[in-house]
Image 1: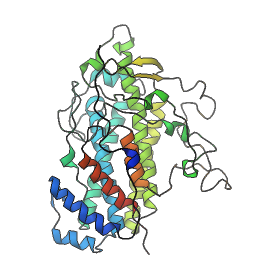
Image 2 (image 1 turned 90 degrees about the horizontal axis):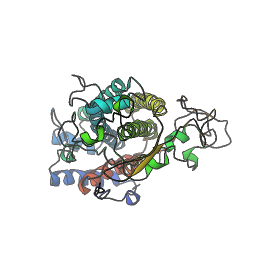
Image 3 (image 1 turned 120 degrees about the vertical axis):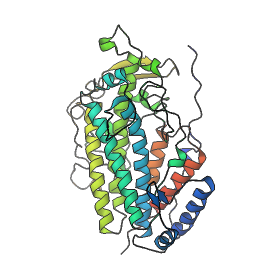
Image 4 (image 1 turned 30 degrees about the horizontal axis):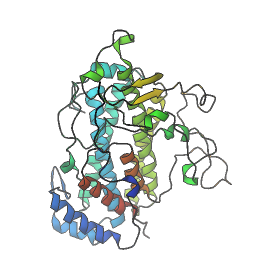
Length: 398
């Protein structure tokens, strides 16, 4: 079969996304954002329940009930939660539990069965993760609105196609789960007893082939979930590889939130805003620990070739060399103690990284490199970078 031609990866090169620091960034960026949103027709100052009064927006920019920094941090986190909700909804439509709490889709039987090879409770966990992210985005935007501040609104960018597999809704998406390059260094990072990314350390990939090329984490069409009568439960190697990719992607997404909330919490001013970040951030940690556990159960697969793209993926037995041993057995899901703040202190079990410099832009770069935004517009990237720059410019005030 001829290889499928893939679109270019990103409108913006992640390596060229910059981080601006400076005292007068807020006023410039805030005015630019509203002008930009008006020019592309995105309601950046409205929730679905109604618009925020222009006079209240002006008051916020002049230092209303939230500091400019706190508002910027919350706005970026709201956008991040909207993005998470979008991707988790796609997973839930095909592999989760569809009900009144998380409506939409009707499930893909063999994809769901392949996910349950990682854990029999996967559909329920996917459902609950989806519901959590939805409540996070709605709460943060509602809180911003209650303070008379701009909210995050990405509805104008829901232009990416849905999976064509049976079970998926045919609606516009923010994220692309069908061309991922999944970074799996989170696996080795949380199992290291000597290294910390905040101290400049780097980590090997747990699944080296998964970060090379572009891999689907949901079935693109029903061809991806065609039964294979030669395999147990009729699950083809391709279908299982897609489910395994999803399992590692779940943890990649949630480890990002696990770090992002404590990173940005160090820059907020208001105690109530700090309470919000600590409370939601704790839930992100619970998500990551769950998915860390499930990823380790991914069935080993050797040299599975994607017939549409020609890309090959291998899921090794992570209990065997070069991993294996006490620190790498797959049922370990709690952070190993490691260096913290500086190497002179005793090792400590911690979230990593938590260095605050460039936290929001780092999240944008990581999600972009993941392939999550393949097909998105330059306007989408400009808006997201704008939010990240504002958040990274925030400083704790006296």
